[in-house]
Length: 72
Image (cartoon, rainbow, N blue to C red; front, side, top):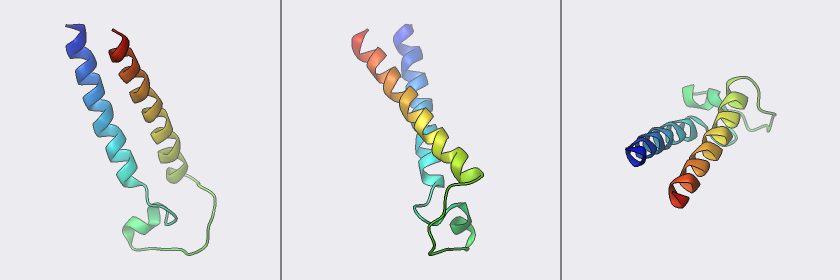
């Protein structure tokens, strides 16, 4: 039963992580998805910053769950 729960959690995390990564665009920001583009590098702000930190958090949790599954 525990193994099934870990499987479901890991699948959900994988889908979320993939979605968050696909929402990001290198150098263009979230505006690039809607036709706007900029050739000037700027710091992450607003939604871009939130997506960046969400990606890091989901990756850490995904890796931790993978390690837990490995050792159990």
